Length: 300
Image: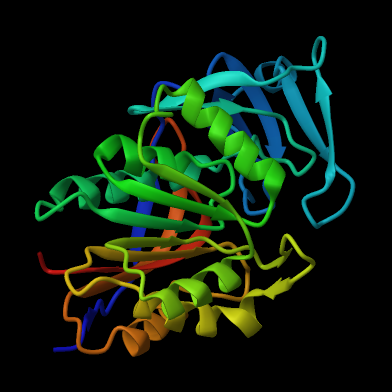
């Protein structure tokens, strides 16, 4: 039986939690709270006007000034430059950091995905589930799955990112959990796992639009995603629980990714949902769509 593909999109809404809130937005910017710091970042989708007074925005601890349209720029701080600071989501503790690319070393809208991954791992009862996190970046999804009871393989081509993820695991008190840290091109790693006959019960696939591997390999989303997805399908265990795909490229869609998953997961049954992730303002009536996803879940 083939997977059932949802007929309509699903919006996975991330509302605030203890260490994060979207306080306000408008005029191409968003005002957020990360732990005890307030931050202003560009967001072109915010066509509307802010609700909070200008003085609230002016008191932000950090403001990102973009230098181009490709995420680059620099931070301007109210006082001395801020270093790493502690955050948490559930049992996953991690560090925020002001990067040169307008984000803070994680993506808060992914909290909706973290909650889903956490639930899928905890519901897997036959054995300790094995989860593969590709393009794992600073590792929050890996920590969420490990804390929920999975044995995790975390793969990223950036040695610096994997080092940051390992530090996050130590900070979270999860160093004793079964997490493998792999610095390697995701396509090369998965192709080798196919040859080895390795199997995973859950796969997280969150590729960039463009990237370079540890040995100079070039990743292009639209050229390379189909082959990688096909290989990921081959290493799903017979009773696997999930495969989650997320992408930020403007020209991709959840609908398109759901078609790719349906093709590669023929005969597995289950359900494929698709749609977008959004951040919801504290007041609850405005939201910003930030990435697209498609996800397969088994019926078990």
